[in-house]
Length: 493
Ligand SMILES: [Zn+2]
Image (cartoon, rainbow, N blue to C red; front, top):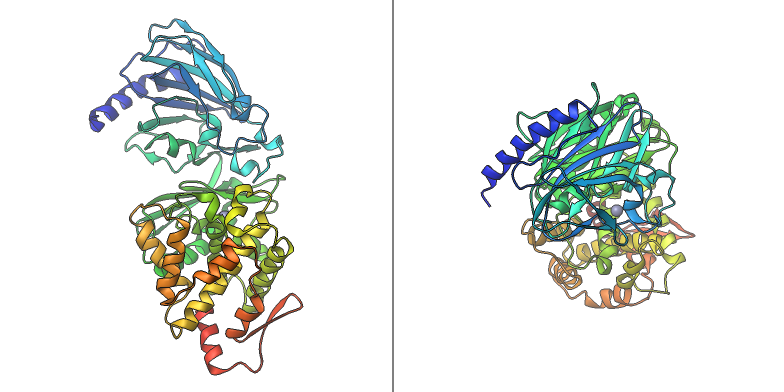
């Protein structure tokens, strides 16, 4: 594929589609330009729950599909929100499109062929009770904006997953789109996604938005929220800037590219979700200094997934959910403390609370197996993973005379798997931990990660001069010099 020529063709094709869309005509003729794929997304101010899509798709077989990822919980998957799906061929003749199972359609057309689709997605994902995460991981609308992940909106032709895609947003005046897709220079609201996976696994926000942009090394971070959130967006931007700089220096670099953080204040289930290069969050009240501990933790946790989960990528995620979530939790809590979001006792309370939620459901299933049902084992995975991270941090420091700990484990994971793009396995985590500690830690993994024994937090706390009793972690008044040095290493303030 000559990429440059291909892109030029797409841009040429796009210009004509945009012109048609701008007239908001219902009688668009299909675009017959070159073979390629593109989407035009139109949102109107008076009904921002309707996302209109026009797509030019290159059929390689007779199937159209939507993503199945995180679609459990909605009766007909994401396709249940698609309405008035119509298709025409390159001569403008109607093509029949018939539902053929969950999230798939069959097309009555000889292939290969270029097909033009028109449909709209009625955003009602915020009325569904999803089994894991909430509407912030799918789509929702408030008065002045609409948030949607690519997977809830874009229908694709099966078999074309690696094509670069061009997306144009057609928006009301004074509305903008905040998206991790790459800007096409010189083209308003026009973006490319490297492939279908990237198009689907990202969030977009369209509306009247407050924004703030920061840069850390090669990483550009854009914050956006509803237009009444400018203060919150500035505050979050400045705060995250410190945290992300901390992550970057701890791991020896930040992933390149653009990260967008899309937040709203809404009366929906609050929480956050991290996608490929975007983070979605819903708050019940505007983020401010008064409630900084809540949102500070959320953005710190989600931002670290950019390293742990998305750049340091697992070969088999369910077996390492405890690492993806728990080690992210440990890192984000440490950095919320190191950058002044929380104080030392808050941090100890958070560790003790996580341990409590882990112990409450420990003994039934191992950490390595718990990821098969992430929703059902949620607090066990997060709390158990965090406790494992803390125990390994202390063991590595103890074994290396406090020269290496959790930071070195994550740095090694980033160097070996993040920067190389090589997926890691459970065995790789053990290998890295043993190498950082300079000693065999495999029995720890056998007992507490593969097995169902409960990590004895009190024992590890004692090594760092801490006392864990009655569900609380406190500093031992009789702490020795060696214990104090180890604790200082863990806290690194
Ligand atoms: Zn997470």
